[in-house]
Amino acid sequence: MNYKTFDPSKTYLITGAAGFIGFYLSKKLIGQGCRVIGVDNINDYYDVNLKYTRLNQLEPHEKFTFIKGDISNKELIMGTFEKYKPNVVVNMAAQAGVRYSIENPDVYIQSNIIGFYNILEACRYYPVEHCVYASSSSVYGANKKVPFEESDFVDNPVSLYASTKKSNELMAHTYSHLYKIPATGLRFFTVYGPMGRPDMAYFGFTDKYFAGEPIKIFNNGDFENDLYRDFTYIDDIIEGIVRLLSNPPEGEVQHSVYNIGNNSPEKLMVFIETLEKALSNALGKEVLFEKTFEPIKPGDVPATFASTDLLQKAVGFKPETSIEKGLQKFADWYVDYYEQR
Image 1 (tube, one colour):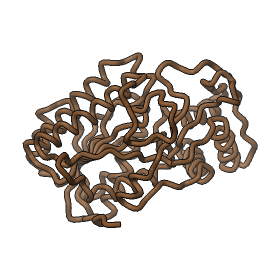
Image 2 (tube, one colour):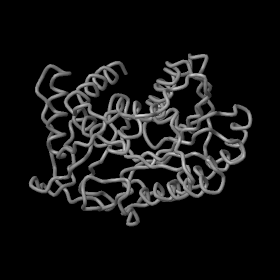
Image 3 (cartoon, helix red, strand yellow):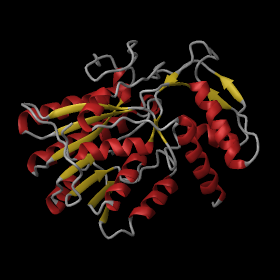
Image 4 (tube, one colour):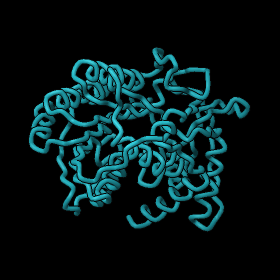
């Protein structure tokens, strides 16, 4: 296996630095002695206090520079590239969420299409060694063949969010072809962990429990054909990204796409039971969610399951944190964080 090890002498531009993955990646790189330029618009899609809590852990570091701004602002992005001349750019800024894309399509086009276009244009005029960007497992749509492999047909997205992520892959491929920009897309599979996104199911379930409200499960109460998800713990995601940063694609078109998933899908109901146990441990009392069952929502897919063979071949790594371990870390953090507020 021949891949380059991480280089701490580089300057990294990370968009979405106050977001879940962007924060952990920035923290990891700063800890390795890298210079990190973080960009984030701190939008209110979810609780901005959590975003500021993350930022407060980054800002004291002298190697971290924060720029509050939107990647859809081309002047800001061009100016940032010109001033800081990053060696590597990691685009984690995006409007996330499948269901929200049905209610608010404009923001997805603004951030995920125009914003990413601006990043690629900046890489064109201020060349970088590697442009890494967030794609999503949602590009696989309602594919029945599992596990999902990077070579699978992904031209039938079932949400606007998925369409924007597929568009990002096509745009990056084109810019790699035309301007020799080494680019890597990462198809993330249901990322979870402490300081995660409150719009994600596990976080929302926990919020509902503490609010004394029932949780909604969108599987029609069909336990035989329950939803499957490839839940991937944040530390595994970060390890995969960091290993890829110094290993840009080679070849005629320098563009690659990798799944980053746990390669071990869990039934949603098993995940919920594991979360109940983790919260029971954190609180020292039995936790059982009150549950209501509803039909699957438009844009949701019944199963996600990542093949991680390509990632393992490229950088010798596959995610393997169990949901028992990962959800316990989340539950401990949640109880501690919200008790202090």
